Length: 111
Image 1 (cartoon, rainbow, N blue to C red):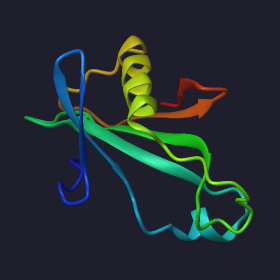
Image 2: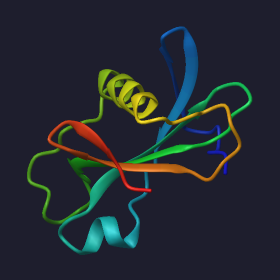
Image 3: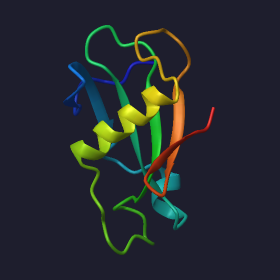
Image 4: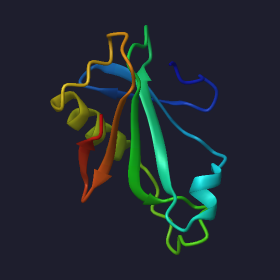
């Protein structure tokens, strides 16, 4: 499933243009349970195929348990894209989403 274009940011990694999005509004789970993390969706800018979905190790700003907000930066996104590609993410193919989570700065595939 493609991510909406509104609110996305572009990033170029190895001469390929991607779009990424962090949902602005917190989900119920991100805000109310004390362990909500920031979620990121990434896909190709042109002809998107498989979406990369990452649950980061960063506390969501709306989570009541988040004391310090650590932003997701473009360099984080670039590193995660490279790690996902190394884990065999194929962003150009139409497939189910490629999911993972960040643990100690490393992307771990969850599907």
